[in-house]
Length: 193
Image 1 (cartoon, rainbow, N blue to C red):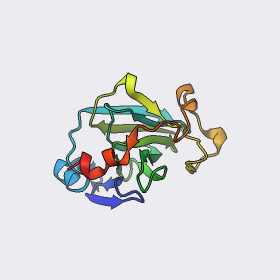
Image 2 (cartoon, rainbow, N blue to C red):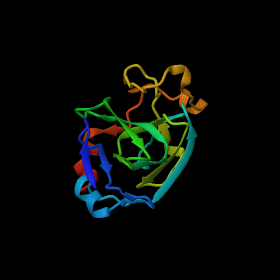
Image 3 (tube, rainbow, N blue to C red):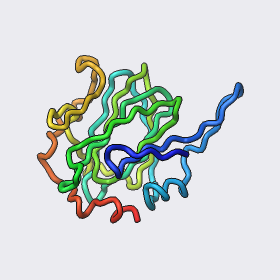
Image 4 (cartoon, rainbow, N blue to C red):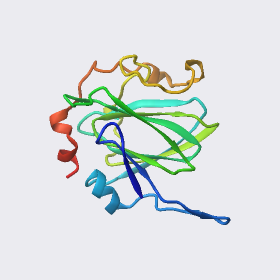
């Protein structure tokens, strides 16, 4: 498995080696030893899956403390533009984001640590999206940042009229209105030894 750094050091792309022939393919979608060597010690406790059609944008989501979540995300079918935004106040990359095209062909995955907001936009006719989480979903701690906040300057790659969001996601607060994560508490080496 190849591990590819991004513009934000704590966010990583994992790209597995896929073995294929005329019968189909095989790949290791997750290996704890490789993952821990690059991202640190994590215990995943919940797997989620969603199916969405072209132009659907889900995000930017996170969970507030003490139910913060790390995610390892991938696409089972189709393709998406995946986005992670650094919400750790005081971080050298605070307010910056990483984008990564995830697709079923490459089977690549994005590691999003605690202290980041996450979202994705479906680029294919439909996409099935899965993710591993290291904490359980808590409705009372569900939160987010408005996906179209101009201060984040995220280039989603589709015309605005083709993007569809839920009412909930359309009314999320702008970036910086609330601070839930302080960098000194959410530095990667502190959370994932």
